[in-house]
Length: 90
Image (tube, rainbow, N blue to C red; front, side, top):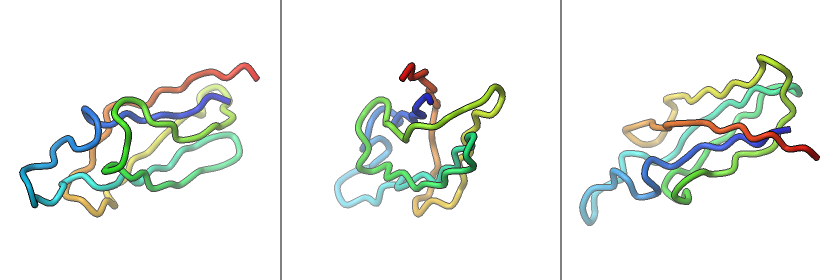
């Protein structure tokens, strides 16, 4: 039942460049593997909050927690630095 989270790279706007510059990081395409299957999602990096961002709530058995990040982004770069799983006792 823990939620999966992915942090922004020093918060939104990181690597943005000067005025009028196109952001090299736009979106992240994720696959979250859990007990009920695979959740595919696109995470809007440009509008992300600084710090940890909530990606959902999933049931996980031992040795099944996995997140894959693809290179299908609209931007020039794909970046993520951590995934945090937190146990939910509900």
